Image (cartoon, rainbow, N blue to C red; front, top):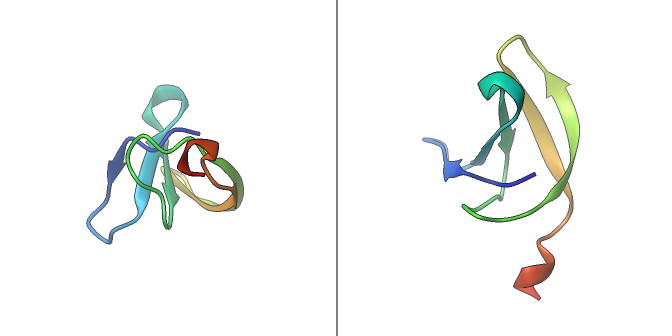
Length: 57
């Protein structure tokens, strides 16, 4: 999942099909992350990072 922007609370925000929003704590714009969805709501999901961006190594 690619982080597109940072939200008001400082969390990474990615968008998937039809603009559905996924919020990922600790994500930064352009990060390519593997995440696990923790909670799903009607218009937003919350996820945690499974592994970090390999480019950051």
